[in-house]
Length: 587
Image (cartoon, rainbow, N blue to C red):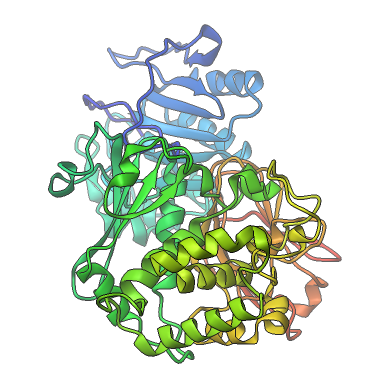
């Protein structure tokens, strides 16, 4: 569909998950990275469609002409790793047949199409967007539609039965777009005008398979920037809002990735999500409100806890960059204990101090004195029986904790870490430069806690096991963002050959990020799995005949295991195939 509109646009912003104020230098693209359409038809001043390759993404702008399919094919031959077309500014097409041909080539190559917040597509550009097997859109991007014209009549002037409509109807059917969308475009605006679709219209016609991430990360707000300053390298901010409307602040320095920031916020959210069947956690609103009232602040700091970061002197709970693992990242997959995951421990300290409350202080700041009494009782027994904190090498540390009145907090953190599998891989084969004896590596929390798995807690520390059941969910309540660097099969099912599954076995919902072709093995927790812009396969335990597959919407399916206590009820979004023991089903 042809349109002759001129726009001044801002270049699309890269969505790589690095710090929220990150910048990159401007680099002139190499000749073999730019592919321009060579047009035989007059372009009347319009810029021919151009593809600019950056790693596995091509940025696309201009107007489609008869040479655009060849430019796309040439680019694809030179860059076989391409997976994403980022549509920056496409005003339309000067050749409708070439536009439909290009759209089919895009679909055949299984490209993801994406529009950033400053993006603009119209007319034939909208048709190209619809060619993506996955289509990402950020709110604010403009999608324009109107009637086509043959130079004399608009398409809306032809009878519904006219063969003139067939090329477009066939195209939309091939793309999986309802034919009602075609009739909508004809009536939305004449060929000389443009209608920009509303959010409701975009949703109604299934234009988008997934909306681009809104990670909820911003620059540090003015109300906090005088304390958490750029001089101290603070540049990112997020929060959790308590039921009373107040905020639990999370401020980050500039070397943490967005995925690390989201991970920290997710773990905090996990702790504060109601656990309806528990004694103390069925309604956590009072705890969350109290944390906000007490001014809780989580400080995400550059580097390691080595005493060199001056921001550690600020009020707040510190958590360091080098001790935040992200699901799917190398530290996580390899269970690298030189970068051991302290996220759960440090955030729990903040919840404990400012939410639960700690006894034996001048004042009790929390809302759960009865639960704290049980924690204290379990801690005293564990220390007495040397279930936790035993050994001569730990006694100076225990004395320090006693003086700080932080024994109960450190004990509970050790139990929680083991409960969620963070020490299950700690063994003689664990990756770490820390020197530890073989016996220490068979325990949790650097050998300080006798149990390193959930099953061992029940045997070695029964009171600790009871504490878990009274507040903490048995599985993780956040949707884990699998790091964009991950490439392979991510397992949610425990496998002794994959050390990270000591922890991932407690994940329920995950979202693959990036564009690598990654697959997922399900567990029994009724998973919700969202794919990325690559090819994704979900792997089940049994034969296909023992599952019921229901299509919920265009890219969303529910797969229910008819056999109890195996794979449960799995919901998948934006994945390409399902693998069963006896067959692979393409969605």
